[in-house]
Length: 238
View 1 (cartoon, rainbow, N blue to C red):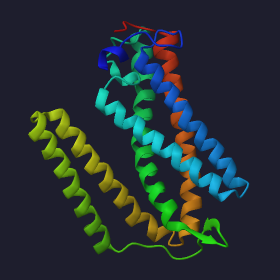
View 2: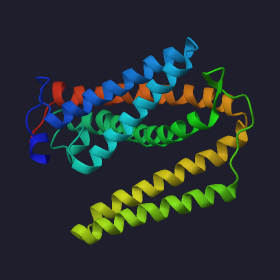
View 3: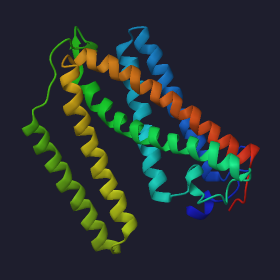
View 4: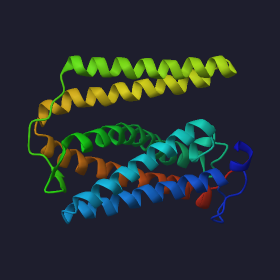
């Protein structure tokens, strides 16, 4: 799989197959978010729910694939080897843009998990129609601790089963540790935000708007880095 992802891509640029798949997936789930946002504006709650849920699951699946194969997207290149522009352009434009993009990726992953859970928790059905519930929606610290403890135990079980099957590696450890940190950050977001917006419906609307902006900017920065790396200033590929 890793070798196939290093082959020339299908778009016709200097990108690898992995980079083109990365851009295609980013376009797909961003498109789902935009259509889902439009559905919310039209008060089509069920359409909004399924489009946003599908987009967020696609996003999470994409980044799981990224870490599994480590060839998707611009981060497959180390240092300046994959960038053919000048050193000044690399240092002052490309690297800051890519750093900002990575930061948005982390925020986007946190918000994806959080909004999936919040979407189910804040909804209700009235006469068979899905809608947001105008009510206080808060989770106690004790409940969060119990849930996080259970999730941690499950992640550790998966990690040690993988170690027993194929041996220990720092790469595996890093992936599972990163997963636990991501989940911990989601719970941390919940603790802070539920105090700011205790009403579940209002919290969903405010954070939905914020998350949508993050995803659109994330797609924009990713598209710019793709264009710079594989169209305007291609370096050594492969």
